[in-house]
Amino acid sequence: MAENNTMCKHLIKTILSLGICCLAVTAQAQLMLEQGQRLAGLQVYPTLSNPQEYRYIPANAQLATRADGEPIFSFVFYVSDAPVSENESATQVSSITQADGGAILHFQVEYNTDAEQVEQAQQELQQRMDDDELSIVGPVVFADGKYSVISSVLNAEGVRTAELLAQRPAPLLQGNRVALSFDLTPELANILLATFKTATPDISITFDMGFSGLTQAYNAEMLIDWTKTQESMQAGAGVKIYVVSLEAEAAIEKAFQDGAIQLQVNGDDTAMESLLELAYSKAMDILYAPIEVAEVPDDQQADLMGAIAGLIGGGADSVLPIGVSGAFRLKSLRSEGATRLSFNKRATTQQHAMLTANIGGLYNQYGDDPNFFRVESTRDRDFDQRQVYVLVDGALAPDIGHFVNAIEVTLNKQHDGGEQTLRELVINAASPDTGQTLGPLSYNNIGDNDSLAWLGYQFKTAWSFVGGGRFESEWRTSSAATINLSAAYHRLPVQIESNMQVLSDLGVRSVVVQVSADFFGRRISERRSVSVLTDTQVEPISLVLPAGEYHYDYDITWVFTNRERRQQNGTDDLGFIFLDEVPAATD
Image 1 (spheres, helix red, strand yellow):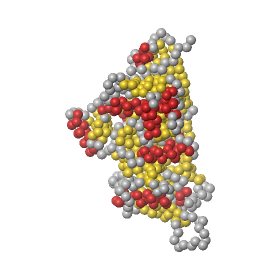
Image 2 (tube, one colour):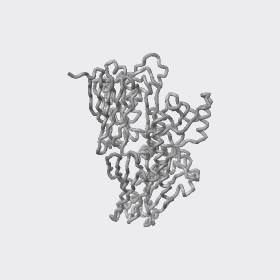
Image 3 (cartoon, rainbow, N blue to C red):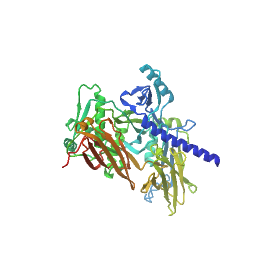
Image 4 (cartoon, helix red, strand yellow):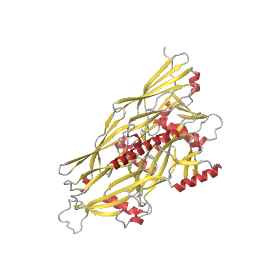
């Protein structure tokens, strides 16, 4: 027992240290995006704190493997004694009937980079830059990310289209794994099995991983005329609130073409392509908020998921300024006035790394191996036990014990005979392997005759937070072998933008900004004090809000050299505060 306790404590220290290291790397190793290079198939960037140290974007998304090198994968067909339908006429007698059943597809995926590829990239970097002191120190630490599972299906017209099967938060550290399980009908299972016999099976997993970096300073500014922007958005088919990235980019492109948004370049700027990319990215941040598909009204989700699947399907690995796997909501736009955004200083901007894995060649190599492909009968099921595991995603793991006190996961299984099985798992800082798969939550077969229905259960989560606040989710129905536990909250950066020269000309000495919001029963706030003379760049305010909530309250106080004070407050979801939009003096 003492040995087990010692091992557990060691694991906890390792996990907590890993979480702290992640936060430290994120804070210190800012990437200089304009100096990025492609070497040996890797995209690498120097860091601001030490330009001789580079970090790389992980190269490959792939099927995870066991210690023996075999893939973590199984495709199990199951057959029950029950016929598919009991509605056949008594006169239709046949000695061969169709049995009920289906298939369970389970596998694990990860993104990683071969050490030899990193070494080759470092050698090319040193040769290209003629500097043997340059080094590639490790992968980029992602700020957020999600994975999408895409499969092609045949529609009623016989045309093959991409379908989004699942979308969940992805682990943020290279090498962490995602476990996936799907219950398939016999028809879908047979279609998928047929594609497994080809070199490119019809199922792929795409990671859309977000990271941030610094742009260079440009002698340019962007002007947004809100009246014209409203008119541009309403033209044609009218305002569309919920969109995918391609639709948002098209709306922004139209706003530029209509003159509603203008990019004003002073002098000759040779880096026009990078400047345009930055301007479009900032316009995207100002006009649209990223959301989960589940937040979209039910009657619009199917079309949106189809559009996302079409954008992701067949996509190559790349780095993009705007992710293609997300949904976006048009923010509440102003109806009048103008906003001026200067690019005359380095700015932090978001980039997205796209990594795609296709489960290719598995059947050719393992089709005859029952460890991977097999058929099972469900006839003798009295001693069956279902084990459901809990997977904590990489973005949440570092918060446990620091921001989140504990998470309670409760599973409820209602059996056919009326019996109920309740299981509970508590996750906190003392839980070993909080970044991996926990559990299982188990239940037995208690008079459950329907094998497919027996896989179904309900679960809910309850969260308690450091400093107060508690949230309890609704019951959700699932039949998956894993419960993917993602945060019940999200971090919203509120950018503070200003032209210090404009403020100085107006006689402003300093500005105080406070942003507040409700967080599960308690009020949180963060404050920034800005000196016009000494502060050239203001650190964004990072708010933690309940998932799906984007509104916050703000209070701005301008202090003038003559000791005059002017205030402005309100509620917004824009994600930007413009300090140089100073209100007029009141009598």
